[in-house]
Length: 347
Image (cartoon, rainbow, N blue to C red):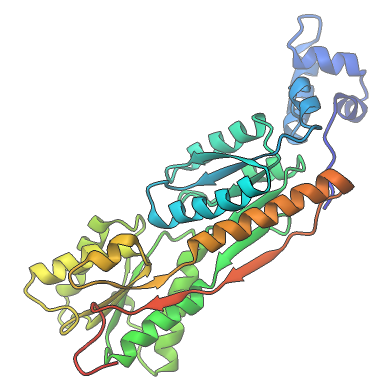
């Protein structure tokens, strides 16, 4: 889809006034009536007009810089993604500006505006868990900025995405628990607005259905922050049931770690009494007691592929002056089996 930068002339033509009147209205000149100022500013906002003419003129030149917005730098998965991005970007002669939304929609809005004003050639974005509206993203897309979403993506036809097959990964994790003899498998569910949460829940449900196991709503516990503390609270809730689960598949590793701590503190054995599987394969997963089985996401590869795709789109736009066709690439997951899920006598 081709976007053109809105100019003062466009606003003037739409309102039937002169460009100079529009310019003065935007500058709040006292000679312009309040009614005209109101009309001009409302239309400028509607059309995503960028009043900084100097910045606009500078955007015509390539800066060889890409911007990255991630939810959390301390998250092991995202740190590996950053390494992959930098590996490709620096080799291609691009600098990288990294920002952190800290899982905040407002911070995400601030970051995307800051990157645009820094004149990056394109952006790589993974959404915050608070993001459920996308006007701030659509505004930048409308200005023709190449954009690639990774992991936590915005479902739009106007931008490319790099994702992992969360559904298949979750299904394999749940099937593994079933193969170990688990019949009452709980699921610790992640942030409700994220696509990865929905895909992991769907994979869990598909595995249950394909093995003729009942879907028990009480065994699906929400962990919207995905923290260790939420994992503890979820496990306490599950263990208080008349029939506790014999297996847990968690939407991420921190929640799984919290659940493991409560299970052990209650005197139960892992995996003999309750087998546990996480998702993301954090570095600390292998250091747990017992080591945590987890679905490995290829973070470094995701970063590489996202950077390659974005740079390719930037080059096409720069050399041919056309908007490249958005693409979607799906990467495979891998179940790393450790002792938290291997019941005695099971392979």
